[in-house]
Image (cartoon, rainbow, N blue to C red; front, side, top):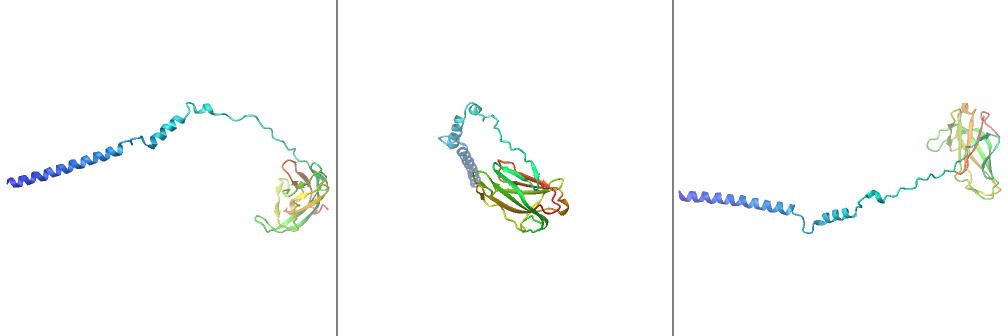
Length: 212
């Protein structure tokens, strides 16, 4: 009988000891995880350094930019001339519609639609003392009361301006734009070669299909 009691007591004591051991191990783990590093850790130093670098008044070092208004060079709006007249394109430069005829436009590029069109040939005379760049010249055609833009087409006979025009010389560029036959009573042709100069604008009735 005493032997059974002693065996029960030993088992109980062992269970209690194991439980106590687990509790101690758990407390040690919690202590190690929660304890800050001896040197305060890199995060602590970084936070402290960041706090020291911040000025007392962050806005005190802010210097606003100048509020001075910068004047913008205004370009005078272009005045249109008749389709058979010359227009000023810039200092010493003139342009005119060398020919304007009805053609059947051909389409090869994206967004193009073959059909009734106008072929426009524009001549530019350089009476200035320096060569001018024509490589980026832009030609546009619009038609009707609402001045609907005509879609530029691939042909026929398209030949852009040369890249440069020397003093005393002339150059021509040929372009094709889709324009419905019934909307040619009022056609506007615009050419611009630089942003600093107003474009040359020609306007008139193109129902006859030919200016030259």
